[in-house]
Image (cartoon, rainbow, N blue to C red; front, side):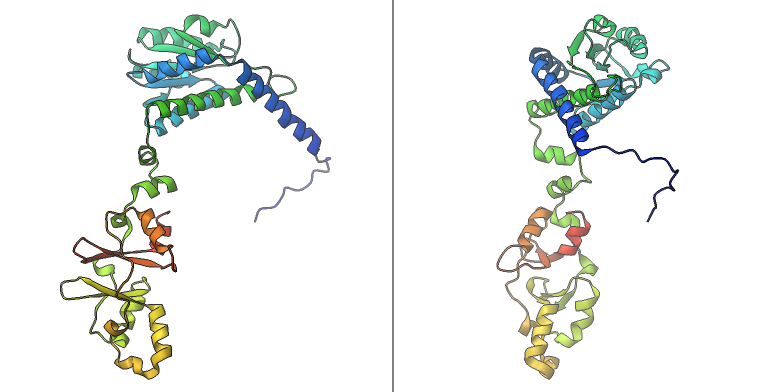
Length: 336
């Protein structure tokens, strides 16, 4: 584990609970000021303009506003909306070439007087893009040269000097992400479509992965015949990591399952008699099963259902032919 740096014999700065609470309350009041004074008409016009975009919605900004602009662009992308971030400096050195007359360029700036953004304006206009400024100071230069302006009312920054952009950027983020979710609703984005854009996340996996994507199959299956002696199948029972034997007939139809739990119970009840018992005599002939096209999350739910949870499900097709096995360990390893 890491350790704290050595003391420099300087008094440690401290902050009281009351001071911190007051800061949170002040920030809450500043945000409430924004909500109370935001023009819904402007917000609606802005949202509808983005919805009507036939090309790509680009965002730009400088400094902290640039980080916010990039984040909002990423939010839209995750919702399946064509978007991108355009660095204003790079735009002046070639990246402006990505803009077309079908695109929208949204420019975030608290002051609206950011020199780098003002330099981009004539270049973006020459490409025919529609320009929108999102600013917080009335009568700013950027608002005067863009096709649309959205005013984000900021009472003041939480910073005691009213300088560090902490409240204004929070407002920009809240505004941008709220508009993004409004667009998500207007486009009727389904949960499945959202999940398709997040395949590595748990939500995405639960809505995308099917049993056939996570099951073991072919040589990975612990298969045996019902006439096989239990003691002859111990290696198969333990070596495949499934905790069971899958009992099949000559056509590979599933007959039943025999688990390591069944082995312990049989040994306790039969003693040395287990050496003469076949798997078919002691197997469960009514195991829970699932089809290959069922959702993987459904398999997990089926494993956990009453009367008692199980650790695996044989996978069979419509003719009850064994084609795989899905295990709880496999589902967890897949991120479900």
